[in-house]
Image 1: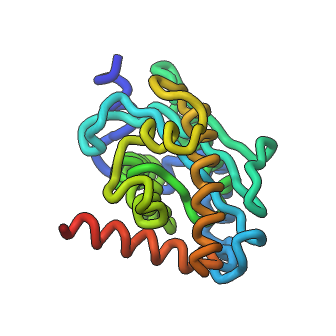
Image 2: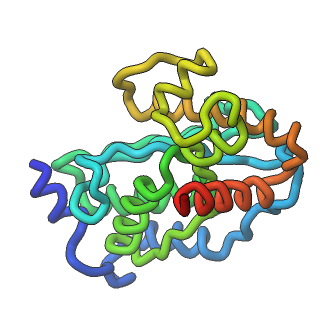
Length: 222
């Protein structure tokens, strides 16, 4: 099943725009033409998108994307009505997959994307967007795996597992979760991080993205 899905998702090269359904082409055109949000607005004016994916394995170059879930955080609050989710079934119609992938771009609206381990998430999304829609997917990433230790050194001096952070902050439960449950606990962790960032005078998305990049580069370089 996974092999068939892999062949379905990754066809060995980006599709031509002529291969896409007209509504998908229109969604992509609208997304490309849209202006990015203002990244130096205060956090309470910024819409962040917390994201998780489902995949058939841990290797973005070889395994398959199985779904995307996301929820927005606005004014420091999780917005359940501002959420997105889709799964890629084995028997999914190619046009339906393309339509959902394009719809996620519209949902994200070029907002900063908050994830846990951005190389993992980015690897899958960059590949599927390039090969299915011809999109070079390069959003602004905020990586909780690396930024949380930088913001909360009293809890962990280096990156630790997600379940360890959940236990430290008394959030959710450990063990297996579906992707939406995972997204919601990530959003609650992000709320904690936003509060600490404000205490540290990191007051906007631009600074937060910069801090994430710095924390990632510094800790990986050790």
